[in-house]
Length: 153
Image (cartoon, rainbow, N blue to C red):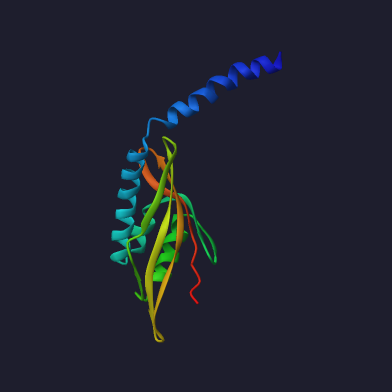
């Protein structure tokens, strides 16, 4: 009896999930992603940590090689520390894949590169990223970002 009741409740929900994921097409997701990244890149070029952080969800997580940064305010502080010396020049990021998870979640992967300048000279750096974009109240933001650094020999 309990199994039948659970089947009656769970089955319609399970069947509805794939249908809702198909409303947002891969091309739509790529367009959304490109808009969010364009805003992020502009804020980065303007050395504006608050504007960069505005692209993140309030409860976002940014996972860096040094560890996680939790929340929009912490993301803003992290970028303020990074950009304070204006010694980092980031190239526009490259996107490899954009995938629709649901109407409100998009995943993307790609690569990044740039140049770090300090008293010792310039050091090219690059790595890979993954992003989870989430839509809340009609607005797309970065819910989670993961970044690594590729070692140079």
